Image (cartoon, rainbow, N blue to C red; front, top):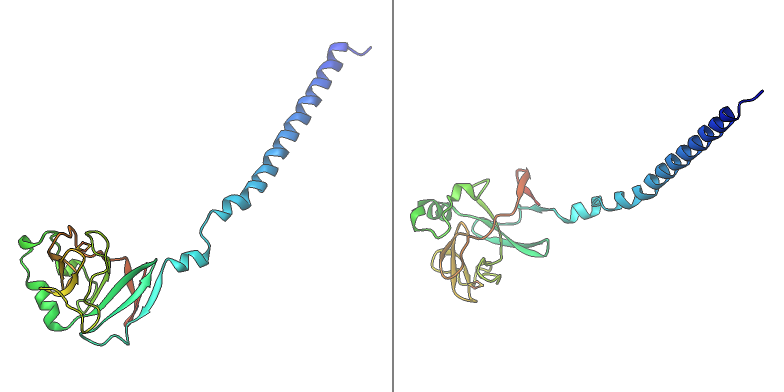
Amino acid sequence: MINKNKIFKIKKDRRSFLKLTTTSMAAVGSAFAIWPFIDSMNPSADVLALGSKEVDLNDIDKGSTKTIKWRGKPVFIKHRTDEEISQAREVNLENLKDPQKDEDRVIKPEWLVVVGVCSHLGCIPLGQKETDVKGDFNGWFCPCHGSHYDSSGRVRKGPAPKNLEIPKYKFVDKNKIKIG
Ligand code: FES
């Protein structure tokens, strides 16, 4: 004779098993449904590429500069002369508002790479064209409120509180840099 309690227990175990299986399948299903959404939150290769920019330095003669656009901002690339390098290195750091050695602002002395946005209120300083005024320190001059930057992009006079920012960059070969 079949024990009623035993039949009840078997039915209960089967129900629990079915419930567990269904819940697990639903969880796995949800994970697969969510994955494309999570995956879409990772930046694509295109987006990552937009964040960096390669610049060929071959066409920037010694003593001249080039402006490129990177992440919506101007970046000044200056091919410095020996004189501009020594001017930048002779400065007494105690006289600087935002003290920074020139050596710490460049990878190679002849190449200065800075974001061309004044640290005061965000104007674009003059000094990129040969005919531009370059301020009292042979670098850049921000005409908005009169900030002067030197040949290392350091603020030397005027209301700007900080030096021109150095973006993250590296040399990918002798004459090419990758910014970002
Ligand atoms: S924004 Fe450059 S000095 Fe004010």
